[in-house]
Image (tube, rainbow, N blue to C red; front, side, top):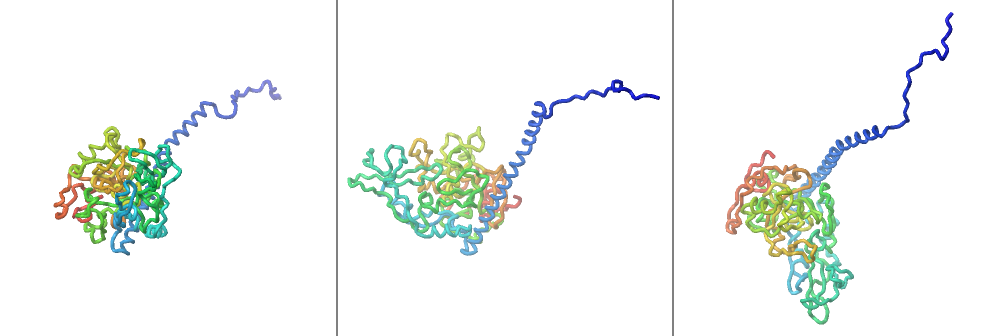
Length: 465
């Protein structure tokens, strides 16, 4: 009979190794590295998804604008005027003896968006604009020092011009415009000449008047969420109306090319090239007031009329920074006014041309009224009432999306336009001779498919976009 082995005689089991619970430092670092890799792979997809959602919302805004334009046309038998409003004269800032249209009227500078308000679900704002509004802009004696000279604005101080008073901060709300207008008063009675207080007239004052409350109301559907720049003062827009392929017509009523016309209205019947072949509106970028070098939101000023003879050589090659694509050269003066106020019908603010392809630079003719800012930190300025500001130039569409812009056609459909779209011959020019402009049609656009989409009755074929 065999006895069981004693415990000491049992075969020994393999020794088990033990370690403390948890990860070692090496394993923990590996897990962190793996998480980092996964995040790096997922983050671009998340960002792309978010941008896609923003782009969809942006195109939805344009679809609503197209619908509003057609609803307006159904009632008024035309699209709203692109630059219109009231005319009149009144004392402005600056020299009190000078008459200005910007106090008792808006000087005919209201944009398409103002009469479009009732069709954008903004009936209360439209009602406020149509009625007389109080004027809170009397700054005489105000207890602050805008000019930094140590004297409270409105108080008298001596200068080379004699006693002077600050009476009116003109368009102070603009991102880079701090244009102060001064009333020069040498009378011993101490009364300040210049702009007097009082109610704003129906349909409002000049569209850059920051003390007029309706102009400061931001309409959410006029902003593209991909453009993260904040609106300041006078409210902004990321959408602009099509002024066609000849920037010389931006300030002229004769022989217009786009669906915007200086001092006139355009009907569906005027769009002879076909509603689906003609741009109604497109995106424009805005700037935050600090990025003066970027094409988005900015325009160059002080350029000659010859930009219309050769846009590539006399605009693009002159203003671009070769080392930094998409940026202006430090050698040119720029203003961040694109989309800077939805109220203003001047093309640099709310219009675009189909000359250079989307996301190209913008070049503004003139500059005789351009001047260095009032203070050393101010950028160059353009008198908002000058012909330069009205917009003879090349104003490009643009966006903060990657590679193109959203547009809405005259039939109300929304499309994506790649910035590489056929834009024809960038060296081609269109006549600026008055006799030609007044009497002869200019024919098909030389700026390819992009130019053809900008003309309303030039007879081009625009299939394939």
